[in-house]
Length: 124
Length: 196
Image (cartoon, rainbow over all chains, first blue to last red; front, side):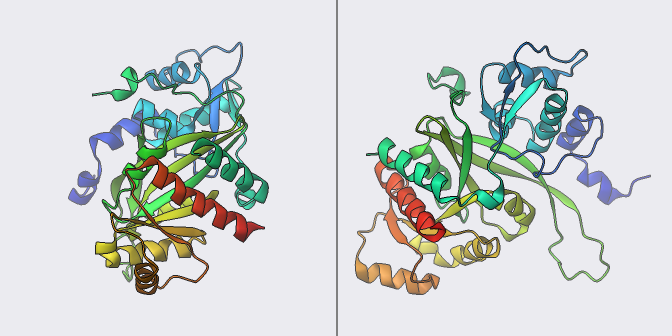
C-alpha cells in the first residue's frame, strides 16, 4: 500500500538505481570520496554475471585512472550508485583505489605549495 | 552531442598522479561557476548527478517527520593536472541552502572555496557566504565582472559583503583563462597563508 505522496516520489530514475543496486543502501561519501582515483587491478577479469553497469565501469576503468566523480559523469550514472558498484569491485580486489589525503590533512601546507606552484607553472 | 567522444583530450589521469585534491567553486545560480571551470579545466567540464533527499521547507515541523522529497542536483566539475603527481578537481557547488547534505559531502576534504560574486546580485551571495562559513571553508572572493577594479569599488564590495580584512577579493572575468587562473592563485596563496 502506498499513499499518493509516496507514489509521486518514486521516479523512473529512482527505480533504475534501485534495480542496479539490488535495493541495497548506498554507501556514504566517507567510504569513497568523489576525487578518489580508481583503475582496474592488473590481471583481473570483470566479475562473472556482472550487470551492464558494472561491465561499463569495468570497461571505462580499464583504460587508466579516473576519479569516482568522472566515472559517474562519463557513464551518466548517479554518484551514489557508482560508489556502491566501485566499492564492490574494490573489495573483491578487482579495482585499485588511490588513497585520498584524509580531510584533516587537506590543508597540509606541502600540498598547498604544490598546488600553488603547479598553477603558477601551468598558467605562467 | 557528446563532445567528449570527438575531443582529442585524454580522459584519464596520468598514472604517475598520487594525490587528488579539490577546490569548490561556489556561488548563486548562474553566477558563472561552470564558465570559470571551463576556462581552466583540461577536460570538457563534466556533470554528475547527485540524488538528494531534500529536507522539508518547514524545518520547524513539529511532527518531526521530515517531508522527504528527492531532488537531483547536477554538479559540474573540471580537472587540472598540476605537475607529475598532483591532480586538482574544481567542483561547482550550487549555493542553495536546501542542499546541505551535498555541502557536507563537498566540503569534506576540500582545500577551500572560491566564491564567485555577481556585483549586480549581491543579496544572492549572502546565503552562499553563510554556507561556506558554516562548513568552515577558507575562501577568497572573485567578483565576476567586466568592471575595472578600483580600490574604491573593492572597498564598497567588501563592506556590502561584510568580508573579513584577511579575505582576499579579486575582480575576474570567468571567461578568461588568465583571469580565472589569477583568481585561483589568489585563493591558494590565501589558503597557504592560513595553513602555515
